Image (tube, rainbow, N blue to C red; front, side, top):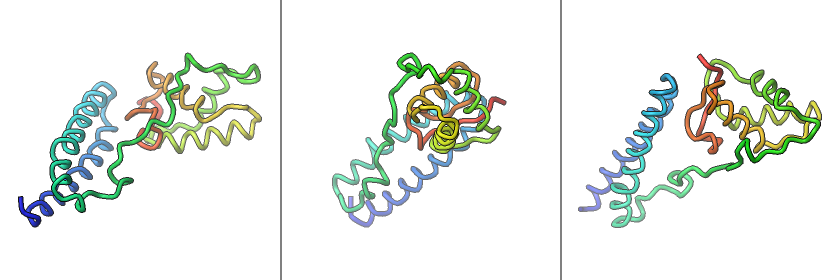
Length: 165
């Protein structure tokens, strides 16, 4: 493949990658069962695009590779599950749920934003609760279908939550 061809193909594929990220956001508006199905399928396509197509071009023309922060896979922010949480005696599950639910809206919002706001609310109330604990509770609420979540809620900047329809 000639350099000019690689450059043109690379540009189109990066545009496709960006379009798929927009599609991920559109998928967020689907009902939960469809959303989970399409998120999984889209993840496979994006992985194949990077691993099977773009890497072939980048191996031949490394200068076409975008900067690391533009192509790095998202990192998991917390693996903490609710089963592993030991709340301080001064904090109840109900209090934590009340804080989380009071900050949720019918519109999607990034998990990072919700965690920041919930962390501030906990601090104002003198509740010693970390973002990781709030995130673990958020995952439980989503997994138990009390709220809606899209994306991998362990990856705070790439996932969103909202009140159930």
